Image (tube, rainbow, N blue to C red; front, side):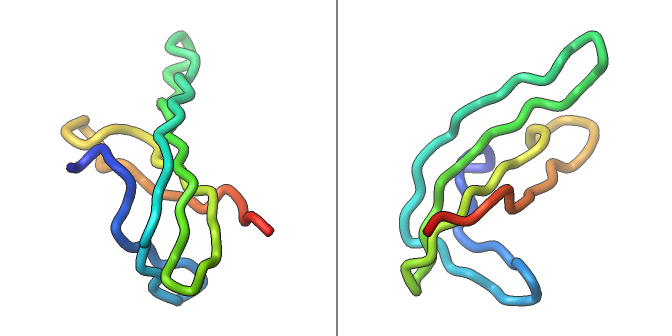
Length: 74
């Protein structure tokens, strides 16, 4: 599903395969300032490391959405 969590992502030149994901938690940007909406996901890779990712924008919009690593979980 295009607007769901990623099945893999690349961070610091390493490809991570996602095995579990929770979310999204949607944060709507300020529409007056044309800020994009963000969908946050908590994901776990094959090695058990957990990441907090977000997607800025939606598939099907004018611009392709972009993914970011927002943080790590201990």
